[in-house]
Length: 126
Image (cartoon, rainbow, N blue to C red; front, side, top):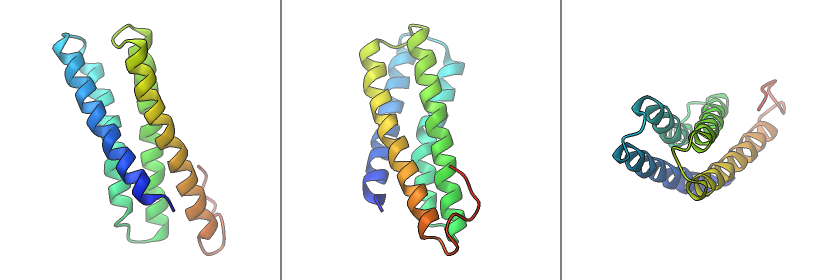
């Protein structure tokens, strides 16, 4: 499994999200929307960290699925920020690229965890 890469990338993404949101706040943009991106972008790594201390395989998979949902939400907010002109295209591209890498790693980790689970898929979906 790619846990170390997932942990490292999610932490780096969270730090970059915090810096981006601070920069946007300095430009006096909408704080309500900034809070949404800040929450979802930093939650990815927190859920991955929690997954590493899961009580069971099902709990592990659940935490990674929550991280994946937060990743999709971050994608959404980044897109809204770009479309509304809150962030420039280059800022968007850099952050979207990081988020996409995280999403792919999360999907691969969830798939691996489900495949290696006793009984196969466990009925859960990604």
